[in-house]
Structures are given as C-alpha cells and as structure tokens.
Length: 194
Image (cartoon, rainbow, N blue to C red; front, side, top):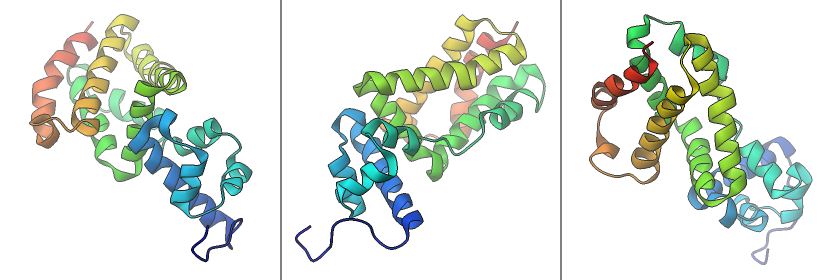
C-alpha cells in the first residue's frame, strides 16, 4: 500500500466489511472462483489481505458469504406456485426468474455463481445444491412434477441466464422479458403439466 494508505483496519468495521463483500461479489462475478484471490479482493476493497481473512477466513468462506442470496427461496416459490392456476405456472416462474436477474442486487451474485460453476468444482457444487435443494425440488414437490422434468426446467433457466446475462448473446441479451416469456413459457409449461 505504497500510495499513502495504511494497511489493516479502517474505521467502521461494518462499512469496511460491506466494501470487502462488494469487492468480492464484483471479482467473483467478473473472474469466477478460481481466478479470484484474497489479495485481489483486498486490493479492490482498498484493505490489507489480513483484514479479509479476519472478517471471513478462507477464500471459500468469502465466496459463500458474497453469494448469500438477497431473497427467500420460500417466498419465491410461493410467488410462483401459489399465485395462480397451474396452466400459467411457467409464465410466473419465468417472470420471477427474469426479475431476479434484472435486479442489480441479485445479478452480481448470480453471475458470480454461474461463472464460478463453470470454472470450479466448488462453484458447480454450490449451484447444483442451490438449484436442486433450494428451488427446483421445492417446486417439484409443491406441484407434483417428476425430478427429471423439473431438472429440464432448470436447464432452460440456467441456459437463459448464461446466454442472456453472462455471455450477452444477441438478440436474447436485448430481448424484452415479455418476448422471452412468450417464446419460452410453452416449452417449460410442457415439463410442468401432469
């Protein structure tokens, strides 16, 4: 820290901790898990690497904390499953899913998770666990859909996320949410129908 900054703690540990988490989210989103380092996070946050270790421990602990989702899965599932008839379940699911990705508070976290899933086993394990245990299996149980079908729903959603929000492939990247819902909902609905 040769530019006049001092190493170590800054005043206001809550603010500093939040800055470290913001830096971690940005780097995990930009670089994925494998290429992000504690030193890089510290540099981005303007703190000493020892402070990152003090707050969070190891890199995987920083990763887990940085990826805490900003919504409750149970609320999400209630919005999808309980908000209307079964024949429009896919539309509701897509609207909630796309809405989460459009929200800046959750987008960085989800981009980090997707990028990390493609570059590290830990990232892949986290994404698999989140999708299967936290979201998809709960929806499957709530509407009585076999696991293979709900997994195919997940594959469509993750595919859209990667192509639209991570890779930015046109014309999907700039398509309206309504266009996506109109085109994709019938396919997903087939998986969700009895």
